[in-house]
Length: 429
Figure 1 (tube, rainbow, N blue to C red):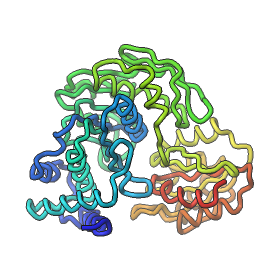
Figure 2 (spheres, rainbow, N blue to C red):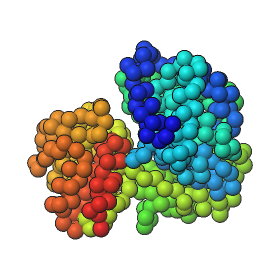
Figure 3 (cartoon, rainbow, N blue to C red):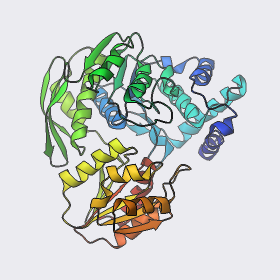
Protein backbone atom coordinates (compact mmCIF):
# COMPACT_ATOMS: atom_id res chain seq x y z
CA UNK A 1 0.00 0.00 0.00
CA UNK A 2 1.37 3.42 -0.97
CA UNK A 3 0.33 6.81 0.43
CA UNK A 4 -2.44 7.35 -2.14
CA UNK A 5 -3.85 3.91 -1.40
CA UNK A 6 -3.73 4.66 2.34
CA UNK A 7 -5.77 7.82 1.80
CA UNK A 8 -8.21 5.89 -0.37
CA UNK A 9 -8.58 3.26 2.37
CA UNK A 10 -9.39 5.97 4.91
CA UNK A 11 -11.90 7.58 2.55
CA UNK A 12 -13.70 4.24 2.35
CA UNK A 13 -14.05 4.37 6.14
CA UNK A 14 -14.99 8.03 6.41
CA UNK A 15 -18.49 7.59 7.86
CA UNK A 16 -20.62 5.17 9.80
CA UNK A 17 -22.56 4.53 6.59
CA UNK A 18 -19.36 3.34 4.90
CA UNK A 19 -18.39 1.14 7.82
CA UNK A 20 -21.83 -0.44 8.05
CA UNK A 21 -22.00 0.29 11.80
CA UNK A 22 -24.72 1.99 13.75
CA UNK A 23 -23.87 5.46 14.97
CA UNK A 24 -23.47 4.63 18.65
CA UNK A 25 -20.54 5.59 20.88
CA UNK A 26 -18.21 2.75 21.84
CA UNK A 27 -14.48 2.11 22.27
CA UNK A 28 -15.04 -1.61 21.67
CA UNK A 29 -14.08 -1.63 17.94
CA UNK A 30 -10.71 0.09 18.42
CA UNK A 31 -10.09 -2.00 21.54
CA UNK A 32 -10.47 -5.15 19.45
CA UNK A 33 -8.22 -3.79 16.71
CA UNK A 34 -5.48 -2.83 19.14
CA UNK A 35 -5.80 -6.09 21.07
CA UNK A 36 -5.07 -7.96 17.84
CA UNK A 37 -1.91 -5.85 17.46
CA UNK A 38 -0.69 -6.55 21.00
CA UNK A 39 -2.14 -3.41 22.58
CA UNK A 40 0.38 -0.84 21.29
CA UNK A 41 -1.45 1.92 23.17
CA UNK A 42 -0.17 0.40 26.40
CA UNK A 43 3.46 0.35 25.28
CA UNK A 44 4.27 3.84 26.54
CA UNK A 45 3.10 6.28 29.23
CA UNK A 46 0.43 8.71 28.03
CA UNK A 47 -0.62 12.27 28.75
CA UNK A 48 -4.23 12.48 27.55
CA UNK A 49 -5.74 15.90 26.83
CA UNK A 50 -9.38 16.93 26.44
CA UNK A 51 -11.35 20.17 26.73
CA UNK A 52 -13.60 22.38 24.66
CA UNK A 53 -10.86 24.76 23.51
CA UNK A 54 -7.09 24.92 23.90
CA UNK A 55 -6.45 21.18 23.49
CA UNK A 56 -4.20 21.53 20.46
CA UNK A 57 -2.08 24.34 21.88
CA UNK A 58 -1.77 22.60 25.25
CA UNK A 59 -0.69 19.37 23.55
CA UNK A 60 2.03 21.18 21.61
CA UNK A 61 3.29 22.94 24.75
CA UNK A 62 3.40 19.66 26.68
CA UNK A 63 5.28 18.04 23.80
CA UNK A 64 7.94 20.75 23.70
CA UNK A 65 8.41 20.72 27.48
CA UNK A 66 8.90 16.94 27.43
CA UNK A 67 11.34 17.24 24.53
CA UNK A 68 13.31 19.86 26.47
CA UNK A 69 13.76 17.22 29.17
CA UNK A 70 15.34 14.95 26.55
CA UNK A 71 12.43 12.56 25.96
CA UNK A 72 11.36 11.13 22.61
CA UNK A 73 7.74 12.22 22.30
CA UNK A 74 4.92 10.92 20.13
CA UNK A 75 2.14 13.45 19.54
CA UNK A 76 -1.32 12.65 18.18
CA UNK A 77 -3.72 15.47 17.29
CA UNK A 78 -6.75 16.08 15.10
CA UNK A 79 -7.92 17.34 12.74
CA UNK A 80 -5.02 18.23 10.47
CA UNK A 81 -4.52 21.64 8.89
CA UNK A 82 -3.16 20.75 5.44
CA UNK A 83 -1.92 17.13 5.40
CA UNK A 84 -2.97 14.11 7.41
CA UNK A 85 0.68 13.44 8.35
CA UNK A 86 0.42 16.39 10.77
CA UNK A 87 -1.70 14.25 13.09
CA UNK A 88 1.13 11.84 13.93
CA UNK A 89 4.45 13.34 15.02
CA UNK A 90 7.65 12.14 16.60
CA UNK A 91 9.58 14.92 18.35
CA UNK A 92 7.57 17.47 16.41
CA UNK A 93 8.24 15.93 12.98
CA UNK A 94 5.26 14.55 11.03
CA UNK A 95 5.20 10.90 10.00
CA UNK A 96 6.51 10.40 6.45
CA UNK A 97 4.23 9.33 3.60
CA UNK A 98 5.95 5.94 3.50
CA UNK A 99 5.62 5.35 7.24
CA UNK A 100 2.00 6.45 7.21
CA UNK A 101 1.16 4.09 4.36
CA UNK A 102 2.89 1.25 6.20
CA UNK A 103 0.87 1.87 9.36
CA UNK A 104 -2.46 2.13 7.53
CA UNK A 105 -1.62 -1.07 5.64
CA UNK A 106 -1.15 -2.72 9.01
CA UNK A 107 -4.58 -1.53 10.14
CA UNK A 108 -6.12 -2.85 6.92
CA UNK A 109 -4.55 -6.26 7.57
CA UNK A 110 -5.92 -6.30 11.11
CA UNK A 111 -9.36 -5.36 9.78
CA UNK A 112 -9.24 -8.40 7.49
CA UNK A 113 -8.20 -10.67 10.36
CA UNK A 114 -10.63 -9.39 13.01
CA UNK A 115 -13.58 -8.39 10.85
CA UNK A 116 -13.70 -5.04 12.67
CA UNK A 117 -14.31 -2.25 10.16
CA UNK A 118 -12.98 0.93 11.79
CA UNK A 119 -14.08 4.48 11.14
CA UNK A 120 -11.60 6.94 9.63
CA UNK A 121 -10.73 8.32 13.06
CA UNK A 122 -10.41 4.88 14.63
CA UNK A 123 -8.10 3.73 11.84
CA UNK A 124 -5.82 6.78 12.14
CA UNK A 125 -5.83 6.54 15.94
CA UNK A 126 -4.88 2.85 15.85
CA UNK A 127 -2.15 3.68 13.31
CA UNK A 128 -0.79 6.33 15.69
CA UNK A 129 -0.60 3.88 18.58
CA UNK A 130 1.06 1.28 16.33
CA UNK A 131 3.63 3.78 15.03
CA UNK A 132 4.48 5.13 18.48
CA UNK A 133 5.11 1.56 19.66
CA UNK A 134 7.22 0.79 16.57
CA UNK A 135 9.46 3.84 16.96
CA UNK A 136 9.59 3.35 20.74
CA UNK A 137 8.64 6.82 21.96
CA UNK A 138 9.26 7.51 25.65
CA UNK A 139 5.85 9.13 26.11
CA UNK A 140 2.80 9.85 23.96
CA UNK A 141 0.76 13.07 24.19
CA UNK A 142 -2.71 12.27 22.90
CA UNK A 143 -5.43 14.78 22.03
CA UNK A 144 -9.03 13.61 22.34
CA UNK A 145 -10.93 13.81 19.07
CA UNK A 146 -14.33 14.61 20.58
CA UNK A 147 -15.55 14.81 24.18
CA UNK A 148 -13.73 11.93 25.93
CA UNK A 149 -15.48 8.94 27.44
CA UNK A 150 -16.37 7.26 24.12
CA UNK A 151 -13.59 8.76 22.03
CA UNK A 152 -11.38 6.27 20.18
CA UNK A 153 -8.32 7.61 21.99
CA UNK A 154 -9.80 6.65 25.35
CA UNK A 155 -8.46 3.12 25.35
CA UNK A 156 -5.22 4.54 26.75
CA UNK A 157 -4.46 4.32 30.46
CA UNK A 158 -3.40 7.91 31.05
CA UNK A 159 -0.66 8.63 33.57
CA UNK A 160 -1.83 12.26 33.35
CA UNK A 161 -5.35 13.28 32.31
CA UNK A 162 -5.74 16.94 31.33
CA UNK A 163 -8.96 18.94 31.01
CA UNK A 164 -8.33 22.42 29.59
CA UNK A 165 -11.82 23.93 30.01
CA UNK A 166 -15.52 23.24 29.44
CA UNK A 167 -17.76 25.06 26.97
CA UNK A 168 -20.85 24.31 24.92
CA UNK A 169 -19.72 22.32 21.89
CA UNK A 170 -20.69 19.00 20.35
CA UNK A 171 -24.08 19.35 22.04
CA UNK A 172 -25.52 17.01 19.42
CA UNK A 173 -23.57 14.24 21.17
CA UNK A 174 -23.56 15.45 24.78
CA UNK A 175 -25.58 18.04 26.57
CA UNK A 176 -27.49 20.18 26.74
CA UNK A 177 -25.69 21.50 29.82
CA UNK A 178 -22.06 22.19 30.65
CA UNK A 179 -22.31 19.55 33.37
CA UNK A 180 -23.31 16.94 30.78
CA UNK A 181 -20.29 17.84 28.65
CA UNK A 182 -18.01 17.80 31.70
CA UNK A 183 -19.17 14.28 32.59
CA UNK A 184 -18.28 13.05 29.11
CA UNK A 185 -14.85 14.68 29.20
CA UNK A 186 -14.23 13.31 32.70
CA UNK A 187 -14.29 9.85 31.13
CA UNK A 188 -10.58 10.10 30.25
CA UNK A 189 -9.71 9.99 33.95
CA UNK A 190 -8.47 6.55 35.01
CA UNK A 191 -7.97 5.28 38.57
CA UNK A 192 -4.19 5.81 38.35
CA UNK A 193 -4.32 9.19 36.60
CA UNK A 194 -2.89 12.41 37.92
CA UNK A 195 -5.60 14.87 36.85
CA UNK A 196 -4.90 18.46 35.78
CA UNK A 197 -8.05 20.59 35.62
CA UNK A 198 -7.95 23.97 33.89
CA UNK A 199 -11.68 24.56 34.36
CA UNK A 200 -12.52 26.70 37.40
CA UNK A 201 -16.32 26.55 37.71
CA UNK A 202 -16.83 24.84 41.09
CA UNK A 203 -19.72 22.57 40.10
CA UNK A 204 -17.81 21.38 37.05
CA UNK A 205 -14.62 20.81 39.04
CA UNK A 206 -16.65 18.60 41.37
CA UNK A 207 -17.60 16.39 38.44
CA UNK A 208 -13.92 15.74 37.70
CA UNK A 209 -13.13 15.13 41.35
CA UNK A 210 -15.92 12.56 41.51
CA UNK A 211 -14.44 10.54 38.63
CA UNK A 212 -11.83 9.03 40.90
CA UNK A 213 -8.32 9.93 39.70
CA UNK A 214 -5.26 9.21 41.82
CA UNK A 215 -4.40 12.88 42.42
CA UNK A 216 -5.73 16.27 41.36
CA UNK A 217 -4.21 19.61 40.41
CA UNK A 218 -6.78 22.41 40.03
CA UNK A 219 -6.25 25.80 38.40
CA UNK A 220 -6.23 28.55 41.00
CA UNK A 221 -5.52 26.16 43.85
CA UNK A 222 -2.44 24.26 42.67
CA UNK A 223 -1.33 26.21 39.59
CA UNK A 224 -2.11 29.45 37.77
CA UNK A 225 -0.90 32.12 35.38
CA UNK A 226 0.16 34.90 37.74
CA UNK A 227 1.05 37.46 35.07
CA UNK A 228 -0.01 37.33 31.43
CA UNK A 229 1.32 40.23 29.38
CA UNK A 230 1.40 41.08 25.70
CA UNK A 231 4.91 40.79 24.25
CA UNK A 232 6.39 41.19 20.79
CA UNK A 233 5.50 37.98 18.98
CA UNK A 234 3.59 36.36 21.82
CA UNK A 235 3.04 36.49 25.59
CA UNK A 236 5.28 37.08 28.62
CA UNK A 237 4.15 34.96 31.57
CA UNK A 238 4.76 34.34 35.24
CA UNK A 239 3.58 30.80 35.97
CA UNK A 240 2.95 29.21 39.36
CA UNK A 241 2.77 25.45 39.77
CA UNK A 242 2.41 23.14 42.75
CA UNK A 243 6.06 23.68 43.70
CA UNK A 244 7.59 26.58 41.82
CA UNK A 245 7.13 30.06 40.35
CA UNK A 246 8.56 30.43 36.86
CA UNK A 247 9.01 34.13 35.98
CA UNK A 248 9.31 35.83 32.59
CA UNK A 249 8.42 32.82 30.46
CA UNK A 250 8.00 33.73 26.78
CA UNK A 251 5.45 31.84 24.67
CA UNK A 252 5.52 32.69 20.93
CA UNK A 253 1.74 32.43 20.51
CA UNK A 254 -0.86 35.18 20.34
CA UNK A 255 -3.71 35.76 22.78
CA UNK A 256 -4.10 35.84 26.55
CA UNK A 257 -5.73 32.40 26.38
CA UNK A 258 -2.37 30.92 25.39
CA UNK A 259 -1.00 32.08 28.71
CA UNK A 260 -3.74 30.10 30.42
CA UNK A 261 -2.98 27.06 28.24
CA UNK A 262 0.68 27.37 29.22
CA UNK A 263 -0.09 27.01 32.92
CA UNK A 264 -2.12 23.84 32.24
CA UNK A 265 0.69 22.39 30.10
CA UNK A 266 3.35 23.10 32.70
CA UNK A 267 1.23 21.63 35.49
CA UNK A 268 0.70 18.49 33.38
CA UNK A 269 4.43 18.01 32.79
CA UNK A 270 5.24 18.57 36.47
CA UNK A 271 2.53 16.02 37.33
CA UNK A 272 4.06 13.56 34.86
CA UNK A 273 7.53 13.82 36.40
CA UNK A 274 6.19 14.39 39.93
CA UNK A 275 8.81 17.12 40.28
CA UNK A 276 9.58 20.70 39.20
CA UNK A 277 11.19 21.36 35.82
CA UNK A 278 14.47 23.26 35.54
CA UNK A 279 13.75 26.89 34.70
CA UNK A 280 16.00 26.91 31.63
CA UNK A 281 14.21 23.84 30.24
CA UNK A 282 10.84 25.48 30.78
CA UNK A 283 12.01 28.52 28.84
CA UNK A 284 13.48 26.34 26.11
CA UNK A 285 10.36 24.23 25.76
CA UNK A 286 7.92 27.12 25.55
CA UNK A 287 10.17 29.12 23.20
CA UNK A 288 10.05 26.27 20.68
CA UNK A 289 6.26 25.94 20.57
CA UNK A 290 4.73 26.22 17.12
CA UNK A 291 0.99 26.23 16.47
CA UNK A 292 0.12 26.52 12.77
CA UNK A 293 -3.44 27.60 12.18
CA UNK A 294 -3.92 29.08 15.67
CA UNK A 295 -3.88 32.84 15.14
CA UNK A 296 -1.01 32.37 12.72
CA UNK A 297 0.34 35.49 11.01
CA UNK A 298 1.15 34.77 7.36
CA UNK A 299 1.87 38.29 6.09
CA UNK A 300 2.11 41.88 7.28
CA UNK A 301 1.27 44.15 4.32
CA UNK A 302 -1.62 43.58 4.44
CA UNK A 303 -1.75 41.76 7.76
CA UNK A 304 -2.95 38.22 6.96
CA UNK A 305 -4.00 35.90 9.78
CA UNK A 306 -5.64 32.48 9.97
CA UNK A 307 -7.32 30.92 12.99
CA UNK A 308 -8.89 27.50 13.33
CA UNK A 309 -11.48 28.37 15.99
CA UNK A 310 -14.44 26.10 15.28
CA UNK A 311 -16.98 26.96 17.97
CA UNK A 312 -18.43 30.18 19.45
CA UNK A 313 -16.18 30.24 22.56
CA UNK A 314 -13.09 29.83 20.37
CA UNK A 315 -14.36 32.40 17.87
CA UNK A 316 -14.95 34.87 20.70
CA UNK A 317 -11.31 34.49 21.80
CA UNK A 318 -10.15 34.84 18.19
CA UNK A 319 -12.04 38.12 17.80
CA UNK A 320 -10.70 39.42 21.10
CA UNK A 321 -7.11 38.81 20.00
CA UNK A 322 -7.71 40.33 16.55
CA UNK A 323 -9.38 43.53 17.74
CA UNK A 324 -7.68 44.08 21.10
CA UNK A 325 -4.13 42.76 20.69
CA UNK A 326 -3.54 43.58 17.03
CA UNK A 327 -5.78 46.66 16.73
CA UNK A 328 -5.60 46.90 12.92
CA UNK A 329 -5.48 50.48 11.62
CA UNK A 330 -6.84 49.91 8.12
CA UNK A 331 -9.92 48.10 6.91
CA UNK A 332 -10.79 44.84 8.63
CA UNK A 333 -11.59 42.03 6.21
CA UNK A 334 -13.08 38.69 7.27
CA UNK A 335 -12.90 35.46 5.27
CA UNK A 336 -15.29 33.06 6.97
CA UNK A 337 -16.85 29.63 6.56
CA UNK A 338 -18.42 27.37 9.16
CA UNK A 339 -19.56 23.79 9.72
CA UNK A 340 -22.59 24.77 11.79
CA UNK A 341 -24.52 27.68 13.29
CA UNK A 342 -23.20 30.48 11.04
CA UNK A 343 -25.18 33.13 12.95
CA UNK A 344 -23.58 32.11 16.27
CA UNK A 345 -20.10 31.90 14.80
CA UNK A 346 -20.38 35.26 13.04
CA UNK A 347 -21.65 36.93 16.19
CA UNK A 348 -18.77 35.47 18.20
CA UNK A 349 -16.27 36.61 15.55
CA UNK A 350 -17.82 40.11 15.76
CA UNK A 351 -18.34 40.02 12.00
CA UNK A 352 -20.39 43.22 12.13
CA UNK A 353 -17.23 45.07 13.22
CA UNK A 354 -15.44 44.07 10.00
CA UNK A 355 -15.58 46.38 7.00
CA UNK A 356 -15.81 43.55 4.47
CA UNK A 357 -16.96 39.93 4.83
CA UNK A 358 -16.05 37.25 2.27
CA UNK A 359 -18.24 34.24 3.01
CA UNK A 360 -17.15 30.85 1.68
CA UNK A 361 -18.06 27.19 1.92
CA UNK A 362 -15.75 25.32 4.30
CA UNK A 363 -14.10 22.40 2.44
CA UNK A 364 -15.90 19.67 4.39
CA UNK A 365 -19.02 17.60 3.74
CA UNK A 366 -20.46 19.48 6.72
CA UNK A 367 -19.55 22.91 5.35
CA UNK A 368 -22.41 25.44 5.45
CA UNK A 369 -23.02 26.83 1.92
CA UNK A 370 -21.44 30.22 1.31
CA UNK A 371 -24.80 31.79 0.44
CA UNK A 372 -26.16 30.79 3.87
CA UNK A 373 -23.09 32.19 5.65
CA UNK A 374 -23.43 35.42 3.65
CA UNK A 375 -27.12 35.69 4.53
CA UNK A 376 -26.32 35.28 8.22
CA UNK A 377 -23.69 38.02 7.92
CA UNK A 378 -26.18 40.44 6.38
CA UNK A 379 -28.75 39.62 9.05
CA UNK A 380 -26.11 40.42 11.68
CA UNK A 381 -25.68 43.88 10.15
CA UNK A 382 -22.64 43.45 7.92
CA UNK A 383 -22.83 45.88 5.00
CA UNK A 384 -20.29 44.70 2.43
CA UNK A 385 -20.71 40.94 2.04
CA UNK A 386 -19.59 38.64 -0.76
CA UNK A 387 -20.15 34.90 -1.25
CA UNK A 388 -17.56 32.57 -2.80
CA UNK A 389 -17.68 28.88 -3.63
CA UNK A 390 -14.25 28.15 -2.20
CA UNK A 391 -11.89 29.39 0.50
CA UNK A 392 -9.17 30.01 -2.08
CA UNK A 393 -11.51 32.21 -4.12
CA UNK A 394 -12.51 34.18 -1.01
CA UNK A 395 -8.85 34.68 -0.02
CA UNK A 396 -7.93 35.76 -3.53
CA UNK A 397 -10.71 38.37 -3.54
CA UNK A 398 -9.76 39.60 -0.06
CA UNK A 399 -6.08 40.00 -0.93
CA UNK A 400 -6.78 41.56 -4.31
CA UNK A 401 -8.82 44.35 -2.75
CA UNK A 402 -6.71 44.91 0.39
CA UNK A 403 -4.34 47.82 0.95
CA UNK A 404 -1.03 47.50 2.79
CA UNK A 405 -2.48 48.74 6.10
CA UNK A 406 -5.57 46.50 5.99
CA UNK A 407 -5.96 43.32 8.02
CA UNK A 408 -7.42 40.01 6.80
CA UNK A 409 -8.64 37.28 9.15
CA UNK A 410 -9.61 33.85 7.78
CA UNK A 411 -11.56 31.89 10.40
CA UNK A 412 -14.65 29.88 11.31
CA UNK A 413 -13.28 26.33 11.02
CA UNK A 414 -10.00 24.45 11.00
CA UNK A 415 -10.91 23.47 7.45
CA UNK A 416 -11.14 27.13 6.45
CA UNK A 417 -7.81 27.88 8.15
CA UNK A 418 -6.17 24.93 6.39
CA UNK A 419 -7.41 25.95 2.95
CA UNK A 420 -6.64 29.63 3.56
CA UNK A 421 -3.05 28.93 4.60
CA UNK A 422 -1.61 28.22 1.12
CA UNK A 423 -3.96 30.72 -0.52
CA UNK A 424 -2.91 33.64 1.68
CA UNK A 425 0.75 32.60 1.63
CA UNK A 426 0.66 32.90 -2.16
CA UNK A 427 -0.13 36.59 -1.96
CA UNK A 428 1.29 37.56 1.46
CA UNK A 429 4.20 39.95 1.92
